[in-house]
Length: 263
Image (tube, rainbow, N blue to C red; front, side, top):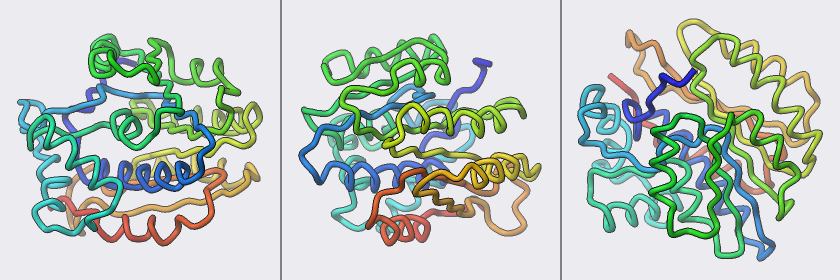
């Protein structure tokens, strides 16, 4: 399905949770000089205007990144904050980086980036955003097929983000079956999976299947993004990790504490 448009939700509380956690992983994995491959299954546009009609319609950007920026709750040296500051200085205060841009900003010259995006509009946006970056390879292909096709990558040391739209109910099971396949083809890869917590608890089957898959370094965390009593369909943001690097739990806990709540 190609109807999903992330611009309505860019910079919202769920994005804050996902992107700040991703920044923690990227910062940890780039401490060593060894090169890293970053792979994303559903990359989106790469950069979002929080004053576009779509973003203003939901107001999620102001409730998410706008709220934590106004409250000053991000530590000055947090990698997520550093990227947000760079984007605001370069493009303006209303612009927000998607995960591809976040990765590009935190990765180094020796690293490689592969972005899968099937939607023609988002694919075109990605190509424009990264047209001058030789590290980045933008693929117009199905994310599930594309990720498996390039595994194991070069460099083999890798971080893989799985972040589909979950437009159809069967996608939860598809992701649950997909992660062990990734691990089988690239056992050393760090894998990060985002999923929504909805009033209809579709995520429970996904989490149950992954927890029973006996994957190494398995870790799961969830945080609320809607205030108690809210009628919002999306009330929380969940992350699953495979091969979670040592030494990041405190930083991930800190991310949970800054995530703002929809009213």
